[in-house]
Length: 193
Image (cartoon, rainbow, N blue to C red; front, side):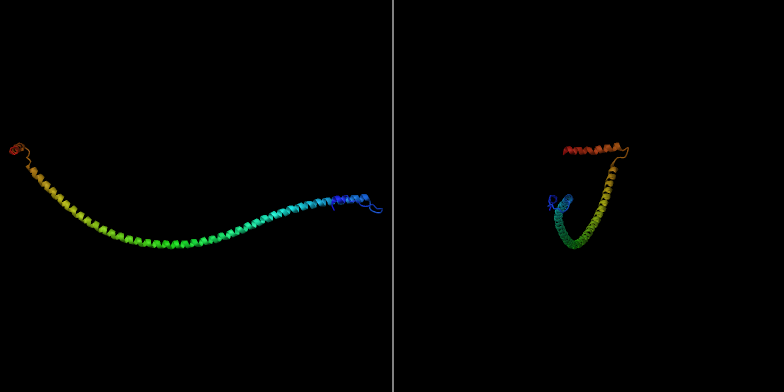
């Protein structure tokens, strides 16, 4: 029964009954209340529908969030497992690299020791050869110095002999005559030849 049907309701008239105006006022008041309640009910129904739609939308979003959360949790677990695997692999590689580095370092030490020993031997040989060459060169230098001094003495004696042949001051004219006399027969010999 609606408020409108309540307001239009007709009652049969009887002799003994209620006053029609009072009944009409009461019916009108009841109809107005019913209208107000119907409006309130319609508003509540609309609100309920809005809330149902919002709840449905929130449920869909919540489902999407739950799915995302599960995907994130799964991804985090997978990432953690991968991280642990990579960390373990890196640790193994680091140990292998360390062992290889130790091996290479030991090999390098052995080779360096061999090179140093060979270099010392070669250096000792070169030093001995250099010292022997130094002795030879010193002996040659001494020989050359003696030869030089001997040559200087020889040149000095030759120069002194030549100086002795030179005329003394004042005897220049007599010597020139002698030189000319000695030179004249030579010139004749050259012409005869």
